[in-house]
Image (cartoon, rainbow, N blue to C red; front, side, top):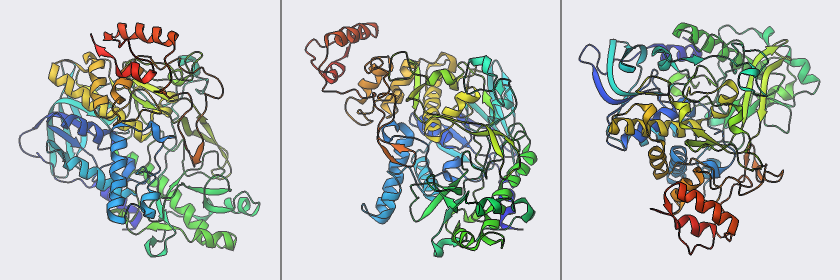
Length: 602
């Protein structure tokens, strides 16, 4: 068996079930999908001594964060909060402990947001191990659900030893594919909506079944002692790749691996990872792509065999391309020699031939829930530097609407992806309704959440999914404690729990989690107090100073400015808002910070 085939074998072999052949397993909260969103949901629910089952169909937890996507998708450190912030701080602490505070590894971890896949996996396991009420079931693949009285009563799983049954009170679907919500009969969409449906400028004129392209996020290195040669796919055909040679000779590419600023074929993300590793990705708008949109349309609703076939095609294409660039005599020698300095990492993914077992599913099913997130939700509020206000926000994001393409025209090499876009936006709020189904009383969906194709392209990022996962975990606790459906959970109480855990529901660049007034600022700001503080001028509608790669200093126009004198006009507006919220105002406040710090319940 080749190293490449090991991946498929590892994913299709199932381990013995925890409760196979015996009595059903009962739990308070069952979470299907040990993605970062699923892990954060488990951690949040377990804080209240809730009995949690975290159920993963494969043998490896952590989703893409432990499968090669180490280059975290955010723009400013000030946007990070909650579970992802804690996770990244623990990753940094790992490098401090093992290499020292002033080490290259600590520097390259980029404040812990750029951990090696193996370190990310270790940290997730450590976080889960601290919660004794969390039990992890691996290699349990969902086969069916039982629904009664608008609630999920039972989950059935396939294992290598037969069938396992779980009887949950609450259920969270944290899979990238939305497998559980589909099995429960929850409405969903696959593909793109027509522009007329939600009035989205980035949507196509007509609805279709296209979805974002997938690719593997290989972890590679030029460090010779740790370097493993790329395996050759069984179906390798050099003629599939020869069209790249004229492009190289014409100067379209100066190197096989690189980063924007120099023409290259494969994106080696910057900053580099600790220990001289790189997260390798698809090049947006490039002449040669790793993603294969159109070849993944059957993935979301496909059976296991269909998905494995699609995964294998993508993996073979990527590995074959790299092998060609490194070894084929038609490739100019200097180009070929430099390409050959790259290889897989000897100390990553050892159990699967040094290759990540999971493909990067950027988009699959999307739930049609209580609230459908669209392009309009990230647009600027009128005359404001901030995006549209959502008083029922449970999370924030600030990346962009980013799509790697949904179709392809022309030859695979030299052709063009279609449906590709990147739209920069101001930091945006995400309302509770995106994780809530319309009817099922005990299901929440933080990953395959409710959004249009365009809206989902702003939500599909691991830091955001972890925030939504936290909200799902906390909402599950409230649903259980109050005996109400998820649709009836009080959002204000949910927000208080999120803030207490260091999560943000509005972006405030100069008041971070852990500061004494963080919760007070989040509470007042999420009600709209910070909207309108800065006008929507061109200067305010931009990111801060560029740091490196996709990272910037804080967004302009999103500060509280604690020491700013409180104008009469702002005092009047904030006083009216405080009265609306049932808060008592301190008459002696002279600055913005003093006003918010002085608010008290009536």
